[in-house]
Length: 321
Ligand SMILES: [Zn+2]
Image (cartoon, rainbow, N blue to C red; front, side):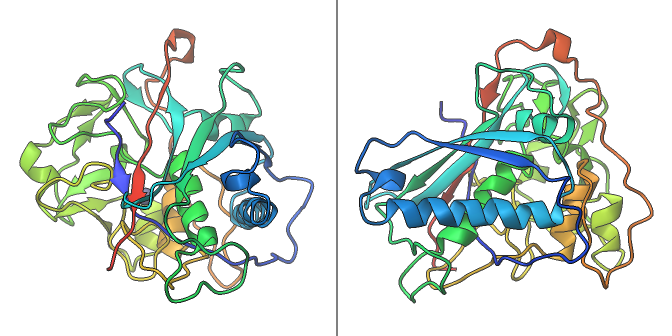
């Protein structure tokens, strides 16, 4: 299905967080579905590629405090002619309201709401020139760690489910199924919310291509000098990238990444966004703990009514930017 949000990616570096309680960490189950000899099961590079993705999950566990499980299905394709580097997303309920999807719910509660499905998926295009291990990427290589960190962030819920018309990409309706991330979007730095309770898009098509959309969660704001964080909202709408990324130098969740660039740690603003959408975030020691971990309790989402879940896959492409 092609409602894919596109985007570009990035990131990492393994930092050990002193004092972290290792008994409370997300258990990541990465299932690689590539055929033998291909992609993540490549005879020469497969093991190192898998190891790099495991390193990404270890980094995420140093900044997100949860003790549930994440089941991710990982695969790849090989298309040198495609500008897409990778794509990923969570399975999300089609019920109207705001939700982060199955990756969030399984990670934070330990409850697998759809045992027959993975919680999310990620796909990489090894037709592009990726680095493999944890060393710095060469000038002509896309950094696998950075891109996996970016993609896994989409799977965690760092994404928009809005389409250019404002209708939900998941349910195809408005009101419909949107992300918790969406629920924090505003027009302008002090403007109106783009969404109302229950998963109701109340913005306009013009808002979505205004270059003037911001994420207004309290933790993100606190990490951004008291200001909302700008969201990528170009004109024309960039399907797969628009609204699901932020505009912030050196951020992991920018819409694009150039070869030779590594973005392997989240910015304070990105950690704020994760806190705003409902994660318990482990702040770097020097930063004061945010006073409010509020938020997000999946407003209006009835899992009892969960029908078919769809996944959304922001696809991230190569960029010269
Ligand atoms: Zn992206």
